Length: 146
Length: 303
Image 1: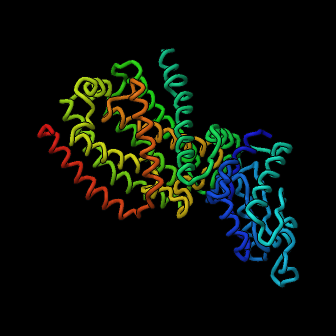
Image 2: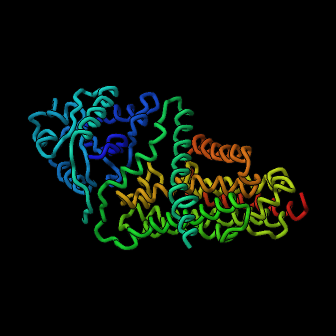
Image 3: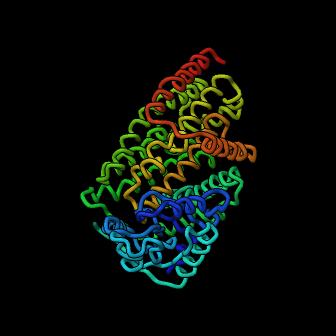
């Protein structure tokens, strides 16, 4: 795995039916006060440009097919960060009739950031964890036709 | 023959232009960061972004035209490399290189055409929206830009090659010193702001609204070429402004002028909100074209 992937992480934000608290904290992380651009982190609007997906919220049966469809379009190497208690283990929504389980039951998650909602510092720590993981691991690349 | 390959690939061509464009892109991001009271990215950040995009997978959308989809970034990139070779060779050798100002104007249109092509080939509604907005943008800013260039041609008395324009200014003083030259300079800065798709006029891309417009379906190396083309545009257009109105970049003062124009562009970008497409069209065909016409009349009167 090349070192550049650790130095330039463009994130895509996927809100899988959250209560919006985590999303607001993600936006806080990207504001000038915390300056995520120091680490090469940039928010992009299209999954095709992204290197990393931030998933917030308790996955439910409506969102899951969309999540899988979007992830299928992501260019490799691609990483997933699950943010917030709901994404990690459903939090207060555990046992609800429409939730289909934590995120890592359905897709591979690289970094977990717990908290309800996690503080911006915790998310930056998560990004640093992802960097370490990128420098250690190996993922494939090539051309994918949809 | 070997000399031409050297020109295109190594010295003023691809390698040097990319390095310079990355430096300008870093200046852009750093000045933006400083304006927002934060640290900003490291010096090599544009290189990391470019290299990372080159190493990523290419995703080709279903239903799009694969050939046009993959070729349009290359078309945009190579046209800008040609412009870069013409401008830098003219500056370095102080002689007319292959092209004059008309060739540069035509070549600077090609990146916009490439954006339209890529938007049409992506089979994505947001991409076609970006392409249609880009068409409207080209229609709006080309007229005042060409009128402003006419001011330069009137002032030089019909010298069309860039080296001649720069040499004329070195003898008679930079055009920005006169009233008509100053108005034409202001018009060109505004037009180039929209040619670069920088913030008051980033309507075709509009990250927050249509997610990058025509670029939305691109990933991997084609996206890297598109992004690099944006950076090169950001480095070349201030250079062209410096050559047309400020007397070229031969001296240390000239390089300061160039950096000044770059910072001016960044300041405009950071202090203005985005316009809508109809407001942009009215702005360019109304006040900007009006100012350009006034500056042409003033140039005829010798002011």
